Amino acid sequence: MILLSARLLKLLGLRDVKLVVNSLGTPASRAAYREKLTAYFSAHIASLDDDSKRRLAGNPLRILDSKNSGVQRIVAGAPLLLDSLDAESREHFESLCAHLRSAGIEYHIEPHLVRGLDYYTRTVFEWTTDALGSQSTVCAGGRYDGLVAQLGGIDTPGVGWAMDRSASSCFCRRGMRNY
Image (tube, rainbow, N blue to C red; front, top):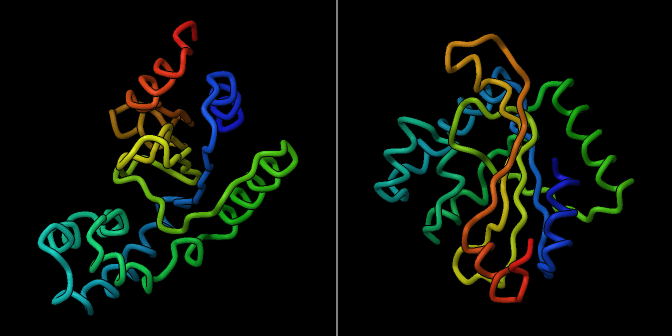
């Protein structure tokens, strides 16, 4: 899916995009990480903004997404999810990175890249650019093996991504209307 999105972005003519990747691991490794993260942010609760305090109770991983500069300074010292991965998740992520390298896709590991929904597992990614103003994400996605089960079905592997509308309008302004 990452290679497919890379090809699409190239066909659309979008330049200056950067791929960032991370692993959320399995639900078990993410649960262990949540405990570490909750303890870390609880020790800094007086410095957190109201939104981060709310997220601390519900989903502390979402604090990693904060745009507040004061919170970002705290996030910079937070434990890393990659350090909490189980062996299988670590191997999966290393395999992904090796595959990207062999395909000639430049990537950057962003240890604070997360998704706020619990059905995401293992790989998450974003294509970003500075060409779109304040919204830097062009395309984002990942594995969501827990989605079907969360909806009442059987465990079913899943993967996908979505492209931002502002990226589409950027393509159209560049004369890419035929894609």
